Length: 130
Image 1: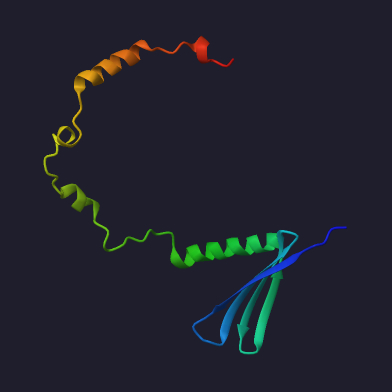
Image 2: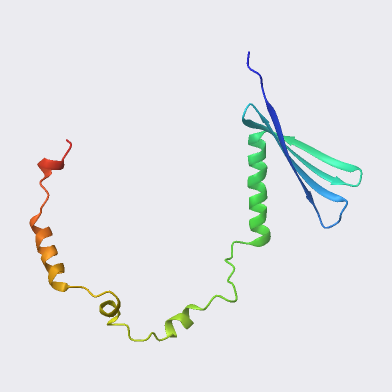
């Protein structure tokens, strides 16, 4: 015989008016959310709705679609964000020799390494697992 553990998690969201709340509750039975409860509360009055997971996901997709209608799918640009034209018009100082001044490279040893790596060709018979 297995004991079913039940856990309820509730969020109460207070709206602008202090006597109005939205309450969202999930009921987890044996590690699986099976019931979702929504309640609109005002003073002593309340409207409560109970849904299973599938009904809740359908409700959630409707809310998401309604959000797109209300807000739209436009991207919001922050006023502080620089315009692309401004970035392109900015001139950069000459940094053509920055690699050699900060990170000097010995080109001779680099060229030798390249020649050595060209000689180390892979033999498919050595590494092919098939």
